[in-house]
Image 1 (spheres, helix red, strand yellow):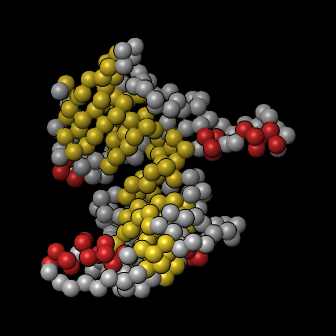
Image 2 (tube, one colour):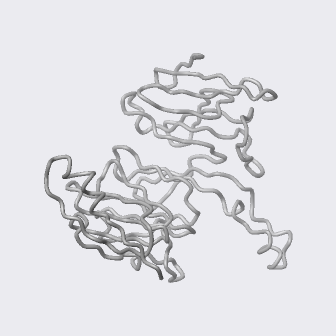
Image 3 (tube, helix red, strand yellow):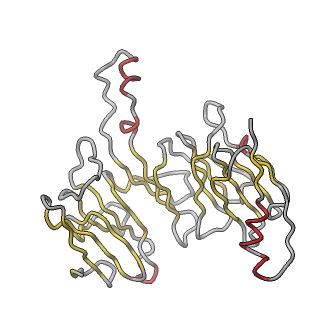
Length: 283
């Protein structure tokens, strides 16, 4: 296996002590492949996790002076090595990070990578979104198994009529760091936590298809079948705020929503709210 020498300490030089005029040593660090992601953990930022392009995970507890390959801590239920797909760090707890595997095995750590626990969700994670202030809360979205089903595999099984259900994008909520999940809604396009400045940090905004049957269409163009909606009880009651609202952005107390104006011409109207979605006006 060809190794790639990464001068990781150079990155620390530019990101940290160099700006303060301190002397920083530069060391050669050998990983199995190029660096895909780097995450600094802990209040002192001394713990560092590195994901490589080949899906291995390395950890340092002294700011990058020494490294340990901790990939063997991540094993699938069948005992095979988990290939790391991506990392997501919690904004509420600096030592908590989610490690998503490229297939159906995912892990979480709340001690900076010293130990890992398997997330009780077998679907391939599409998006994982930690709560901004509640350390154990997170949203997880995943496409159903039907979306990943290989037609050749179905034919090989000898059951051409195998019913694997519809292909749809599901949204789940966990309040215990992935030990349990509850379904919020299905046929989701986009989702986000609300903003603390509006006292809506525990509320959910999302766009979703109104029709909850059959395969979920891929959003290649603006659709008349999607609404921008809101829930403050995690899906028990869903309120439509902007019918035909396809895409949205929460930024600096503003909610911007792209609302379909005309299907044929594919034109949209930009709607804006400054009161947490209670009222919208055309921009």
